[in-house]
Structure formats: C-alpha cells, structure tokens
Length: 130
Image (cartoon, rainbow, N blue to C red; front, side, top):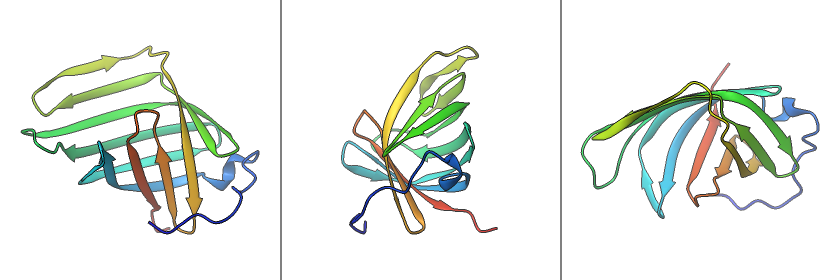
C-alpha cells in the first residue's frame, strides 16, 4: 500500500468520498482475504453488499448493510440500521433496526480509500469507473 503523506482532504463536504467503491482486499487478523463487493457512499448515506471466502473456514460469507454516515477529519462514523449477514457455516444475522455505530479511520489516497475498522480489520476500495 502506498504511504500516505499529507493531510486528509477537507471532508466537511462529504462529496470527497461520495461514489461507488469496489471493495477489494480485506485484511482480517493480518491475513488478506479475497473480497468481492461494492460500497456506495452518498452525502450522508451508505450501503454495501459484499462476499468473501473466509480463510480457514468452509464457505463464502456475505453481508448487506445500510444507513447513514458522518465524515469527521480522518474518520468515518458508520451508523447501521439494516444488516443482513450469513453464510460460511454461520447462522444468519437479520437486523432491521440496528443501532450499531462504528467509527473507522479512513485514508484517502489517489484512487484508493482504505477503511480501518475498530476491530483491526481493514478494507481497500477503488472507485468504480464511470
């Protein structure tokens, strides 16, 4: 991953990160996993659908999530309302009224958005071509 060498863009205007992002490598417990998915960010709203093969486990696991977000400096605060997860020999999670909030560090470098989750996991995203 290229080193980040400058201040974050002024994200008081959430249009800086707005768009369709292709989710690529997912790093969990310092191990990269193949991930296929999309993260849609609009001004104030987000939605995602993704699938990945869990390292060391049978089956593909997937998730669909959505609600609002708030960028503040080098962080993105994800609010969750809808959450559907399942697969990979795990019981499904269906939550239509989640109140989960997750504050994640973000790094925006040319053509890459990296999201560092509080769990220590991270996802690299690249913009979908227009």
